[in-house]
Every structure is written in structure tokens, then in C-alpha cells.
Length: 68
Image (cartoon, rainbow, N blue to C red):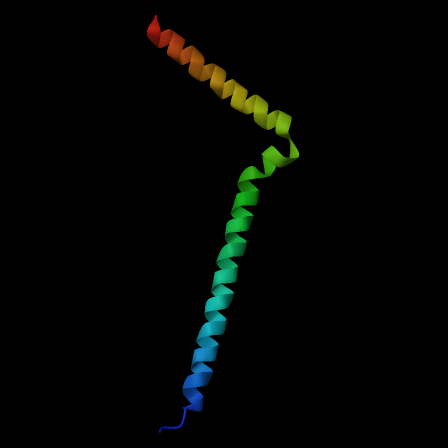
């Protein structure tokens, strides 16, 4: 029976640590991107609703114009 290689266990531990740190970093970046995109909706829902309402009204006007 062979004895375990200490150097390979150390490299596996290092690889696992780096992989976990990278995964956590990706999750943090995704959360920050989500917050960056949705922050106006969270902090000023009236402004977000009015901007959506304006684009909806413009779309309806374009459809009405296309139909006439």
C-alpha cells in the first residue's frame, strides 16, 4: 500500500481554496450587478414606474399609428 503524497494533498487543498474563493467572487459580482440594475426600482419606485409607463404609452402610440 502506498503512502499518501503530502505535496499533492497540499496542492489539492490550494486548488480547492482557490476554486471556492473564485466561486464566492462570482456570486458577489452577480449580486452587485443585480443590485446595480435594480437599484432605481428599489429606491425610487415611482420614477421606475413612470419611465415604464412612458415607454408603454409610446409603444401603444406606435401600434395605433401603425394600424391607421
